[in-house]
Amino acid sequence: MIAAFLIGSCVVKILSVSLADDLLGFHGLDLLNLSITTKRSGRGRESCLASVAFDAGIISPQFYTTLVLAAVLTSQAAGAWLDYVLRKAGRC
Image (cartoon, rainbow, N blue to C red; front, side):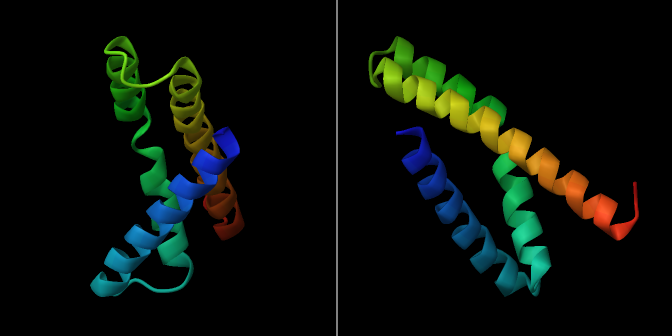
């Protein structure tokens, strides 16, 4: 479940941010960088919303775990990506 959710949510996020960024004039690697970094920004909100939904009985314990893991893993992946990009550019 976690793999399917991570892949699906990341694809949707990358496509939606890429569309918006393309309209604003960003191109190439900038689109990917912005998509990845905006995925990182939802960790606190995702965890909070998952907790409220779980407490209300809206989602199962398995899906709650999936949401929290997705929030943590995407945050870590975005941080690693930014570190890689900055090191590659010689800024660190």
